[in-house]
Image (cartoon, helix red, strand yellow):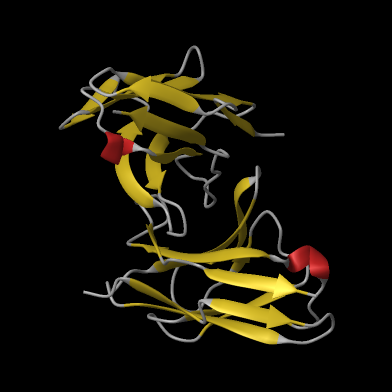
Length: 112
Length: 112
């Protein structure tokens, strides 16, 4: 069955450093991969979408890579700030799939 | 600029009671979704509606029914609530199925 794995442990990063979150998937060939941010008590908020023919996508301090050979996406936050502390969810999606599968998320904490 | 609105925000039910969760979006989106989120399990898709007039099962549809009342509204019904349905329920919408989703802030449901 399709499986999505994200860093199971929380990630603690010093402010100003780059945070790198991992999303691995198996038994799946997604055409797109989305990343969302979720704050406690709130719904997820869309951040970035990357297509299978794109190796890398950037938005301000965020960068996402998509390696279809390794079946992996990396999500980077450069110059991290305490306000970046949240849970980050990855969500691969097939080109004809009508369903999106979410990973269980990685909790990121940025300490001042 | 409401986006996706869910009601109620909190609810406590007794086993066997019925309940309808309401969701409305004001972005003229075609697709709508219902998820549940449990600790450590991420978001799991219950039902979705690709467009007005259609609904389809997601990963965990048992015990639930949905109605796409019109383009704006998508409701989720629990006919006979069970303690296993205690969860946080999120509604989301997107322009089309493969597009980024916009989420409401959830309904926290406890079944005693």
